[in-house]
Each structure stands twice: as structure tokens, then as C-alpha cells.
Image (cartoon, rainbow, N blue to C red; front, side):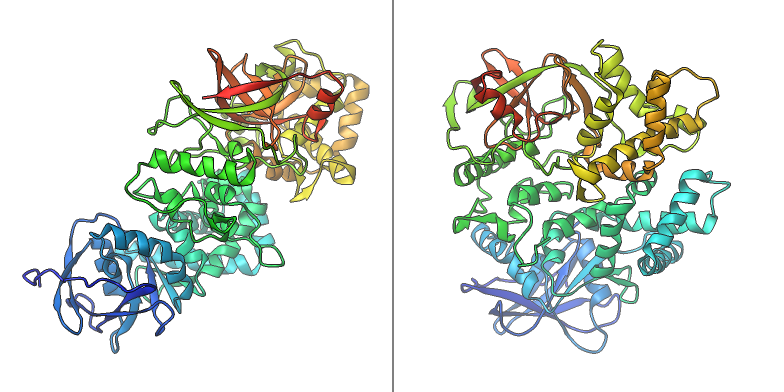
Length: 612
């Protein structure tokens, strides 16, 4: 079949797609298909979702239309998928991007990318190929175990999670842990480690599907997407400590849930920028597709037009910068700055510090807080060109200078189990470490123990307890009690008579207060609530004593500023006469419009900041 002439694509009419009629055949037989052009809302078809893998041609597909026939080369991944999913007794009508789009025609490629959401949304079924097995017998057995366990878990989620907490946290991972339970969780881990779940394009391929079914290794081994979505949503909301203990990547699937989440009226819950953040942990071979792969999302259209048009002739840096400029212009908001997440070393792309790099490895979840540091709208900001590049100019309220900073919070090290395991952590006794770094070492005293409990319970969790607001009222008191309970977990595992840590430093009266609060709280609940907000961030203290949570690359001497149009305070670093954006923060005492009130009464100044 390799001697066939190259199949000659014909131009596609508007709103039309090509669909394959994949001929039936036994496994291993040559792949043959008819190529049919139809309107996107024409005859029913399935759509294939898969990992491209190595694009080098592993085999050829014989393609036939009413006038021509020829061969098209496909990679090994697609060849295996088509072999596994073709039917034995009848043709299968299926849309496959590598064959149904002329990949060498840039204009057609860009046109079809604009229609990609509709292609998957109108498909009768989306067939998701997870991949084949390297070690057929053992790998297939583990796959069957993963699928069986996931289904049993979904039938009784709370009970299976309770068992996981008991055995995985408090048992020994090799000897004392229930072996069958551990094997089941490791099989689940293997499922979510599959490359398929980490592709950027599956977000729309699966998220827009009427019905999506995931096939693993063959047609007989499958899960419906709804089963995977239910598992991953529950684990993100309730099983953060298990996720981090096992390094379980089920959150990549739940991020797809979040991308397409809607309210009761069907309106998207998240803005396009938030959608991009939930999607940025998925990988793409083309950096521009971190944005283009999501243009089918309803929130990508603002004021009647897309925020960016797919254009593969411009650089990724141009695409990312254009998006920020358009978002700022159309929304009169700086909220996109909250999604900047820098590393110490410069990234691959040369971007202004106020432009999120959607391609770079992302380590943090979006900040959250039910209240806002400033109003969402500001019409005074501007962007100007200079010899230093593009400069974002905006007026802000200077709050304070950063005086003390903790080490980075590791999400896998939050649960307290035994003294031996605690001392093996990068940061043993995390809350005591934060107290030492932000109170003891900088010699900035607290007004009372409640000040630390109140400030840390807000900034470490973002003001949410079990997904309910905890910035005031009964939930606020419960969350502070949860934090007190976590502090006493340290006391549970420490040796009698020790004199280390925050609790040991308290007066007898304050110890009684913390103990009485802890009796009403749940350490496990606080760990769940703080995991995603505090993950890979650092706690800090300002010169005036305010406690906050901010970017992992913060340094002493950085400043905290509240900008109208940005709902979170921002950490900036001076750079000659300009500033660099370090990233967003939560700052206790400045999360509910206090900065503007202080400016109005003359206690906090404003100034113009030029951010490069």
C-alpha cells in the first residue's frame, strides 16, 4: 500500500467536513476508508480523540472518494487506534483530524480549527483512545482492576475514601497497608498517568461530546467519561490528601469538568482566562494551541467576537500578548494578572512579566476569595511601547513591603500522621515553620494567638470551608477551629515535655483557648481546604505585620500593591524606574476593599506603576 499515489485532497466547501467510512476488517489487515465530504450537521458520524504521538508515518491508509484513490501516511498511535476501533462486520463512520483535515494546507487547517468544537459537539459519539498496552497480559489486568475499582468507588465514594485515609496515611505503604487496596489505587494512578489525559485538545473533544467513551487497549475495555468525571470531581473536592500522597493525577480530568462548568441557567461559570488556567496543565505540541484549542468555549467570545483568532503564522509570544491586551481592553479589568505564575529562571518565551505564559509548567491553582481587594473594573490602565518593551501602566495603592517569607508549601506534606514521617518532610511542622519565619525570626509580634489563627485560616484556604464562604459568621469560626485542630495534631505526635512550636509558646490561658477551639474542629477538613490554595506558594509577613500568601519567587523587599481592576493584591519587584510583576497574593486585612477606604481617608497613597 506504500506504493499508492498520495491522496489528492479536494477543497472543502464552507461549513463542511470530511468523514471516513472506515472499512471493516480483522485486526492487522490494511486500513481502507472512503472519504466523504458532508455538511457538519449532515449524516451522523463518530469522532476520534487520541494522542498523536510520533508523527512519523508507521503505515498508510488507502483513501477512496468518487474520483480518486491514494494513500495517506499515519503515525503508529493512530494506526493502532483505527485497527482497534474498526468494526468487523460493517463500516464505521468516523472523523479523524489527521486524515479529515489537509494538514499541509494552512488555510484549511485554521478554518477547521475554528470548527473543531462543533465537530466534536455534533458527533454522535466521541471515541477516546487511551492507548495500547506495552505489556499485554499484566497491563491489561491492571487496566481491568483500575476500571473495576473506579466503578466500585463511585458507588460508595465516602466509604472508599475513608478506607483510603485509614490505610494509605496511617499504614505502612508496603507492609501494613491492605495490599489489595493499595494495588487498586496504584492501578487508578496508572490510568490517570496515561498521556491521553494530559493533552490540551481533549478538553474540548471530551468536554463538548454528547457521549464520550474511553477505550483502553481494545474495544472491550472501556469507561464512560461521566464515570471518570464523577470520580475526579469527588476526589478534588474531598480527597486532596490522598491525591497528593499518591501523586494521583485525577485532577487533570477534573479540570475538564471545571472548564465546562455552568450555572443553573447554562451560563459558563468561568471566564476565558480562568478556563485557560484550568487547561494549562494539559500539554500541546504547539504552544499556540494552549489558547486555540479552547476557542470553542463560550467564554472565548466577548462583545460578539473571539478574544483571539487562530493564526499559526504568528509566534506564541505574540498570541499570548494579544490575548492579554484584548482581555484588558474588552473587560476593563486586570484580573488576568492573577494568572501569572513565574519561575526564578526566565521562561522559553520572551514575555512581559504581566503576560501569563500558558505553555510554562504551572504549579499553582488559581487564588480564590469570596471578597475582593478592589473593584473589578478600572478604565484608567494603558499599555505603551518603549525601549524596555510593552509597559502596563496603572495606578495602584501601595500597601507595604514584604519583611519575612516562609519556605514553599508542599501539598503532599500537609497531613500529620506520625513523628517519624513528619520529621522526614521538607518542612516538618509546617504551621510552626510559618510562625517562626513570620513572627519569631523577624521579631514582629502578634497581638494575640487569635490573630495568627484568623489570618492563616483566611489566606491558606482563600476563605472557603468545604466550598462554602468562611470569611465571616459561623463558617469562619469553624475554620479557625479546624486550624486549631491541625495545630494540636502536631502535639499528638510530639514527644511529651517538648518546648517547640507555636502551641508550646502560648500562655496556659491561650493553650486552653486553642484546645477548646480544636475540640470543635477538624484537622482533616483544614488540610482539604488549604491544599489547592496554598500549594506551591509561600506565607509572608509585611513590615507592618500583615500576614499573606503569595508567589513562591517572592523576596524580602518586594512590595504589595492593590490595583483597581484586580481583585487580588499584587506583589511587585522594583527594576530601575519600573516594576516587574511577581504575582498575585492574598493579604489578611486587605481582601474586602480596605485599601480604597484607607486611601480615601488619607492613610495609604496611590502612585502610577509601570510594569515591564
